[in-house]
Amino acid sequence: MRGHQLAMALREAYLALHRRTDAIMARSGVTADQFVVLASLTEQIALTQRDLVVRTSSDPNTLRAMLILLERRGLIERRPHATDSRARTVSLTRKGRSAFRKLWRQSETVRQRLLAALDPDDASVLVSQLRRIVAGLVNSPVQGELS
Image (tube, rainbow, N blue to C red; front, side, top):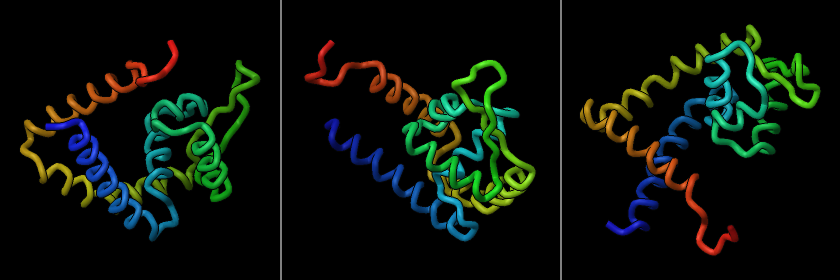
């Protein structure tokens, strides 16, 4: 298999998942990317914006724009960090937790279809392989990049 074929297959799979999730979330006025932010915030009481960038694999400017929109809708709140004056913490509001639970239920069919496309053992192997791909791409220099 050529690298281009693998890259295109990964892109197709990602876009299919993203578009399906966006279609479901649109009914509630949330994008798939915003849903990922909300999901990340359910894992801890509060995260810094920098932590969210890492957890969501988002660009800092894109994440900031999403946070502004989510804050305006009352789904999250941002506050100054307790010990780092340069940082801000982000947490879900009560309304945000409620909205996330509703969105989670609405998107259950997407997760079911995703798993149904694979044998149970294959799903674990695929997750492991995808993580290896990410690590290999993140930790390797780009051709032509100066060291």
